Length: 187
Image 1 (tube, one colour):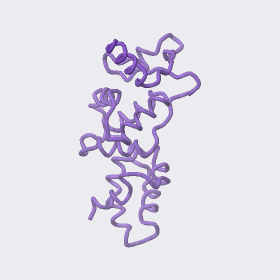
Image 2: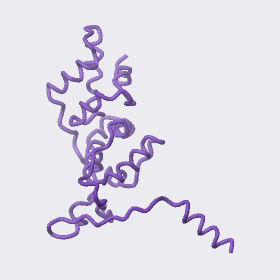
Image 3: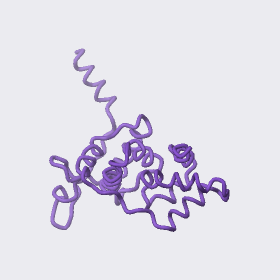
Image 4: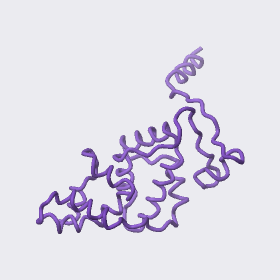
């Protein structure tokens, strides 16, 4: 009787189950070419009604990138892994990932697999001149005295902030690390 009650309690406390349909391509299941690319990884499911995979919120993305980019040698693999996660997880999977990252910077198994697959990835393309200027303008806020510190912080910002998410980064007030943290590296 005690075992039956314990099993019922565990079942009641378990996470909500979401029914999923396997991802398909024109040639059948997407397991062979749409997965994260590492052996044994199944293609992520699609959740009916959620549409295409979404983007991570900028705060957990930057938290992940800052935790991942321990030194310049990991910039390429970390950007590659972030791209794979954003391009392959469903909206619900992204919410779980964001919860893990905001709770305790916990890397998910999917992310670990993506990092392994990306271990040989080169650095991402550098920011364009316009993107650099946008960052410098936002960082210095019109102060000539801040310009040299902001120019110094640009290198770290480019390592941590994906170019296609720069506007999201600059628009958010809750990002950790933020521009101030990049500036601290230059003091």
